[in-house]
Length: 238
Image (cartoon, rainbow, N blue to C red; front, side, top):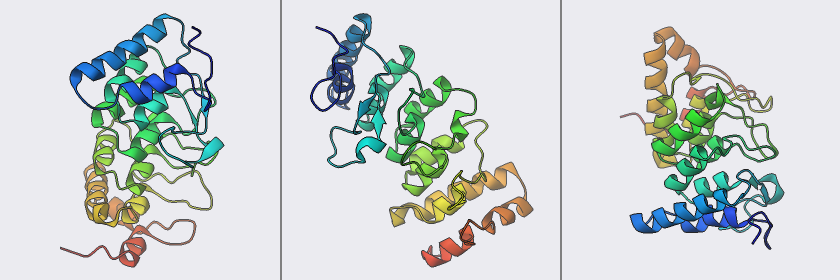
């Protein structure tokens, strides 16, 4: 059996094992799934093979704009043990020709702090501030993706990462938004206050009152500041 043959649906057995066999559940079942991945690696499975069409568990999820490696599939399934194993088995934290970058996907989906730490630790220097300029990407950083998606746990994990840029703008000239812009417009709405507070506290810890004021009043490409976005989206005061 060639572990690198692409099955119907444009995935290999490595993709399917990462997605189907290692999801959160009984420890013995997860260990068995990781064992399958290990056996596939030992038999020469390509760890960074890219499949078209993104997540097999979600219909119409972006099509060819999403190109997933087995690492992407493990992240998408919330399979932390598989994610950590694949990284330890020399899977690339930035697989060639894939989209979006795995750390951005983890931030958007709210992966655990352990998975995010593993991705940052296995990636190239500065990957925590990488802009997503892949097809379908917004040019944002992982922190901006986590803020926009309302993933408070991922936001906190990224804010705790050494070297994270707190007030950097995305690479999209049509947006020009910072993490604070994204936090103030986070979806779902119920997470906005906590996420904005976490970003503001990180800004305050890294600078002074003037730098926080500058961040709050920094305009995006449309001229809207985080304060404007917060008012428009009705973040009520305590």
